[in-house]
Image (cartoon, rainbow, N blue to C red):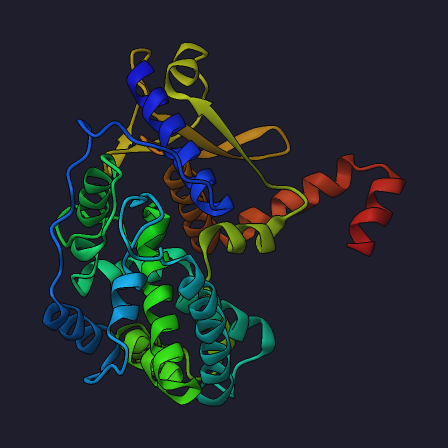
Length: 338
C-alpha cells in the first residue's frame, strides 16, 4: 500500500508540474533516451490519425509529440500546440453536434459534445491510432501507465471508457496534433482533421441514436452517452452523495453495502490497498464499488447506482418522499428553489 501511495504522489506531482509548465531534472539512470521517430513515420501518423497526407511543416508533428519531461530535447514541447488544438477541437465538435443532431435539445447536445472531447475519448483515440508509442518523453513511469490504459480498454476484461483513468498526456497529444494541423494548414485544415479524428466516435453516436428511441431521442442520448456521475447528480442531486473509503477501513468497519469488485459482488479485504466508492442517500449506503484507482471506483459506483435507478424507477421517488417527510420547511423551500 505504501508503494501505491508513493506512486500516486509521484504521478500527481508530475501532472501538476506539467500543467504549470515546470520542468525538473531526472536521474539519467532512471531514463533512457527515446528512440527518434523518422519524418516519414510522423507523416504516416498524421495521415492515420487526421487524414492529412501532406504537411508543409512536418517539424510541427515532432513538437506535437514532445512531452514537457523531455527537457533535453532540442524541440519545443507540445503545450503551445495543445492550447491551439483544444480550441479547434471544441469549436468544431460543438458546430458538428449543432448541425448533425439538430433534433436534440441543448442539454443533450452538451452531453454529446462532452463525449466527443473528454479525456477518456481522446486517450482512446490516441492509443487506437498508435500515437502513444511515438511520444517523446523522459518519464520512467509513463510506459507502464500507457500499458495499464491499453489493458483497461481492451476487448477482454475491458471496463468501457468511463471505467478508465487515462494518463492526461494521451489526450494532450491528440489535441496538440490537431493544433499542428490548424497551424500548418489553417482553420479548414484543422476542422477537417478534427472530424476525421473523431469519426469512429461520431459514427458510434449516430448509429446509437438511429437505432434508439425514435420517439424520444433526447432521453436516449442522455441514457447512453451521459457520464454516470453527471447522470446520478441530475437524478437526485439533493438526496444522493458519493463517499470514498480506503479498502482496509471499509472492511474493518464492516460497512453494510453491496460491493462490486472484479466483475462480481464480493467483499473488501482488511489487507487490501484499493479504494471503495459508496453511493449514499439520507445516510443509507446504496451500492459501492472497489477499484485500485479512486477515479475509476467513483465512476463504477455511479454507473451501478444509475443502472439500479433505471431498473427500479420507483426507488428514486420513494427516496424523495422520505427526504420530503423529514425536511424542515426551510429545507423544502431551498429544494423548490434549486
